[in-house]
Image 1 (tube, rainbow, N blue to C red):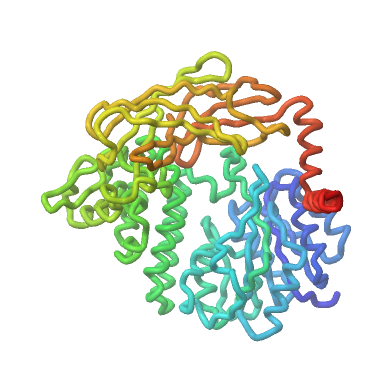
Image 2: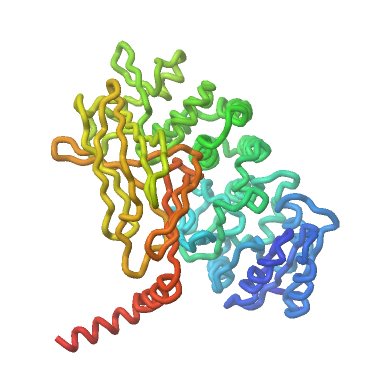
Amino acid sequence: MSTPDVTVTVIVYNDAERLTRAVDSVRRQTHANVEIVISDDHSTDETPEVARRLAAEDPRVRHLRLERNSGGCSAPRNRALEIARAPYLMFLDSDDELPEDAVELLLAAHREREIDFAMGAVQRVRVDNGRRSTWMPHLVAERRTLDGIEADPRLLFEHLATSKMYARAFLDRHGLRFPEGIHYEDQLFSAQAYCLAKAFTIIPEPVYRWYVAPFAASEAASISNQRHKLANVRDRVHVQHLIDTFLAESGHESLREDKDHKFLKHDFRMYAGDLPYRDEEWLSSFADIVTPYLDTLTPGAFARLPRAERVVLQLIRDRRLPEARLAARGLGHGVAPRQVTADEQGRTYWGDRVPSSEWSRRELDISDLDLETRPFPSAQFRHEITEITRGPGASVDLTVRTYDPALRLPVGPQRATLLIAPARRRLRVPFRLSPVRPGIFEGRVHLDLAAAPLPFQGFAGVRHPLLRLEHQGLTHTGLLLAPLTFPALTTRVPHHRLTLEPEGHGPGRMQVRWQPLGLTARVIRPITRRLARPRLKRAAHLVTSALK
């Protein structure tokens, strides 16, 4: 057999259903001189049969089966490396795909000049709604060749091993292999590759299609989506220790702050968003695992974070765990704390006390948020639904509490409006917030979702109610947080099934879901979608113009 130009390793474990899609994406490559190694981590389903069939259909496909399950991605990749015949190597997971020109584009970058690896954009596809986005788009926005990671340490955020094509000689020269027996092996492998490479090229074209199932059931979730497992937390922290050791031993200690910032901004931030859904026992164990490691990070890495994220981190380190859960709700959405405290110097701190240590005062000092002086439309409030009572039909009665820690609202009742928009027109429900005590208001609102205006073709999707305040001719619109758990309401409105339920992730808002039924679903929506296609729109525009 002739020597292939590129070997693509497809790792798989108990994924017979999607393996063919992954392998076919490699077989369809515009650069056809490829070798495909299916590396099976001792699957127990029909994966071996599927792999053998694929190998029989195409001589470029080889099937490698591990003698025992390794429980991770490293061993199947390393075993495939041992038998790979090409001078360039790529890695593909069985639940993902390669765009048709991925091999051609990356190989061209290698042939333009001598580099150790080439990398391109990763296209993320949400399996629940089909939405597509680019992973870390600012890092792959333009074509460039870097002489080492020091030229742009931000690339440590792009730690995927699958978005790159490696020169085999580079991997062998440094003995670079995936660490076995641990998860998040990509992070260590990529950090080592970045640091050891003398030159690498970045191209802006998509070279990997990553299918993401963010809300998959626990037993089907990917490793990165198993954040509810404390072993998952330990694995992430363990890999960080290994990266730190490598940076120190390889003479790249100058990258430590950038790497620490990446851990705080990416890895820890993923757990922070889940904290509202964790119980006290889990939170306590989580703090036990992460706090010793947080204590080793460079101060500059913390200083580069938004204040809201620094607050959550410090509340965890101070073991103010219930408050950490509160602070984590609404991260990135400008949600205020329930309460703030000022010291004798006029500095404002998160929570009901002035922190005791100098470090805690620095991290929990939210004076820079300018809660008292920022323009009213961007002011920070906290709106929480404290009670949900089912009414007749598709209606609910809500008790809403608004926290105004900076005392921006005048004393007395406040005009408020509940907003929800399943289409262009909004349903507006005005109500009154009455003062409970300084900085806290409460009100009752009757929300009849059957009154929400829907388009003729119906609406399929999810919306979250918002709360709008009015003051001196200005308006402020903010998130409306709901109880994290409450019984779902399912009913029917014209031509739709409607479900009101907890969001179940993120800030934890009240979530309203519409699903078209009957003729709306079977006839009207398909016709409307066909008519909305760009080509038909252009044709209709031309006809309209000709008739004028």
